Structure formats: structure tokens, C-alpha cells
Image 1: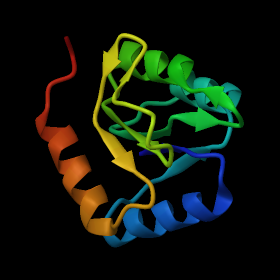
Image 2: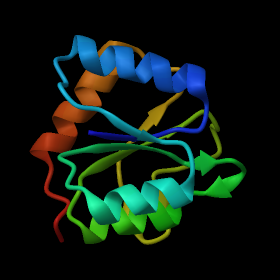
Image 3: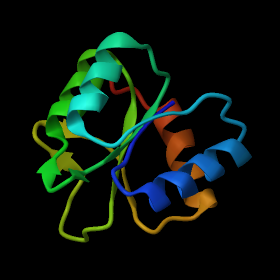
Length: 116
């Protein structure tokens, strides 16, 4: 699983939740450049993507994930953000979120078909 998050405390919280949910491998990126490198060089089953990375919109990462067929959930603390970034329509987790909300979002993501 790829987690793209630039706030270390939030990243640590997410990693803990994923571990509790049984996720065996979590790779993280805190910038658009690192995320793009990881997406281009590794295969991921799922991803969590912060909408805003260091003041920049994460659409390039979302587009790369979509090209590589990686299902993902947007994460945001900004209530103004919606779930239609660019031309992509993906689920959104509002920060702060609980482990139960994360589990539900990942479950819906696994069941959904975003290949089209």
C-alpha cells in the first residue's frame, strides 16, 4: 500500500491504523516527486493520497496512480476539497478519520471498479 502524506504525525497515525487492519507493507511518500517515482517504479494494490502536498495539488500523483491501475482514496483536512480532482472521481476520507472509517473506505475501494 502506498500512503502519500506530508504531515509526519498523520502518516504515523495512518501507518498504525493500516498495521492494525493487517496491512503487511506500507510505503510512504511526502512529496509529489517521491510519490511519482514510487508509482513509476513499484506496484501497489491500493493508495491513500493527501489532496494537498506541501501547498501543491496532488493531481499529478492521482493521474499516475490511475494510469498504473492503482485504486486510491483521497484524504483531506480541507472541507472545501471535493472528490472530483481533475477528471478523476474517487472516494474522499475527511481528516481526522477513525480506523473504522479507513477500513470502510478501503473496503469500498477494493469492491469498486475504477478501471474505466
